[in-house]
Image 1 (cartoon, one colour):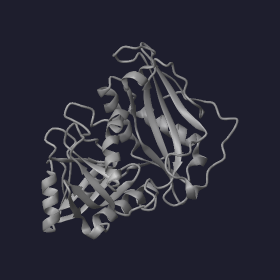
Image 2 (cartoon, helix red, strand yellow):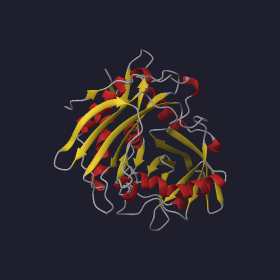
Image 3 (spheres, one colour):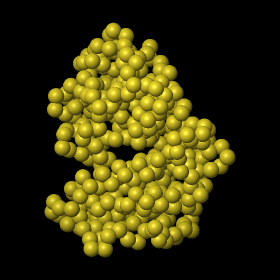
Image 4 (tube, one colour):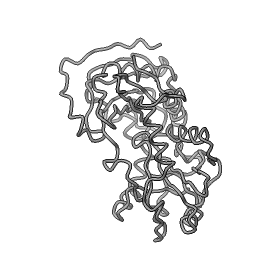
Length: 356
């Protein structure tokens, strides 16, 4: 158990209008901070007033991008409780990221305790308006001042929190996806399976290209053959073809999403055949759109939960999915996941943890 010291703010912020939160715009009164020093390990866990971070210009995070992050939410139920959704899975994924980036790992129980402690301290910031939540951003940065490529000797693990509305203002409306075949997101042996900022920085060129063409997101293909579908934007992607639901396997280039994992478990519980082990060629997706067997496409992720796809564009060819309507499986997954997260339906899967 962490011995977390709490220093409360003397200048509480005014809380924003819950009906106009946007996403990632406002921040709560407090933040969690924990330090790492070589030879001492992780130490000095504390909650303190939200404030800017002061770092040496030579801090290694700026020069060699040794950093990681997670994304999760706290949800307020109708009866006032506050729930977290599978926080131990975020903790385990952060450990995987730290291992790949040579950052000291944080025990799962310490991660979950830290998240709960911050949410408890800023519990009044968890919004109650429909489709709102408290978005949580745990992250780790290398803080040693040293210009040399090596693992840092010091780090900070920080958690900040942001009351947020729906990630997409259009809600569950289907989006248009551009299949990117010029840029690549990840290659075998790289960092595609972890959450580090470099993955997202490298994706921006493709994202801007898609936006310029009138598309909301990019569907990435594999980095070797430019043939197999992988992720869409910052989400995992599912395809329902001929009754079988398929998603790219997590084999080193695809992020093992918590929402992805939860969807697979629910779909199998409901009796659907789910193939998450076989790579899916984009040519097969486009052929299925032509012959009518492409039934649904949707993205999954913490921020948007479920995002239906209504159109795919690949090499100048455009495929419409389900008459540009949200499909029944997509809707059922969204209703079930959000129902569990906000406590509207019983949590038969045992996925939520209450912050008491």
